[in-house]
Length: 378
Image (tube, rainbow, N blue to C red; front, side):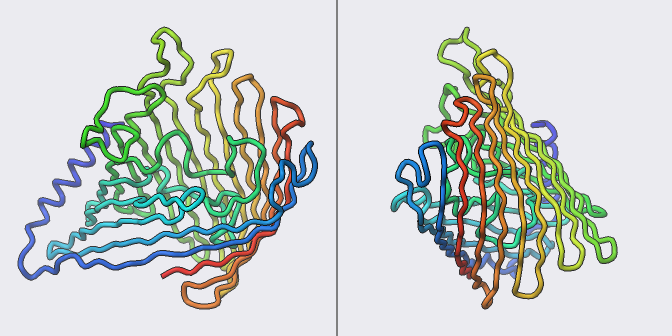
């Protein structure tokens, strides 16, 4: 994987050099600002063995998500475009904390494709195919506004994008090829799981840490008259730096990997499709056998003018160390109304069911929630 990526990178650099040098007539990079503010309120009813609204959970809640992006680019006389992206994540996590700088990278784009370097998602995750949706804020696989508590910290939501193995925005190099007859490929590589290795960050191996994060992905997108189809497949692999403090104890999958497939069919105002992601877990089962997590989603949406409506189902299951399996199902009906450029209101009704395989019904949980939200982008 690394040899392929390094060879591709060399070709990209050669293409940039061959394009010619900049001259005084070319414009310098100019930057602009954009971003969004999302907010939502939830009304929830949860029920497990301890009773409705168990563990003193709130029956209603508020949430927000903020991101401000600064980006800029310029096109040189040789046709190559050079630019950068820097996102500032606001209100990340709980309380008043903020994730500060989120993804940021620079890029070179031209006839050779696109070459990036920075802290950003892998090629596999970048080319993810989601189930069609009727709301940007909500959905069975959304990273925004997960108010219900599935009953197990392992499950945050159904995810067919981030495999959860390491830092999705570690420092990496990425290459995306040009599109040929609807086909495009991407590859990425990160030396380790950090945002950078300088300033003393190039440390020795750490127990449980990951390195040599490499991915490759491919997609096909094409219009067949009034019908559009998109298909994707991706593979991502990691290397565990050190499994256990005791060298003679083997409790890890040394080379955990993720495999992904997805597709969407668009016809007129309708879309139907979904995604599937299987990820090897780092910790082995008590028997020494490997463990997997599998997520998949399916959705159908209808968008006409300012109105969007979507119906989704998502499922996640994970092998537990004791040999049992935990499962999560989420069903969602959502809608959006765009009231102006970059301004919309959204709503969703969802139902979830968590089945804990280890403790029988002790941690099983069902919930129903009503979500109302808005999004303002600029």
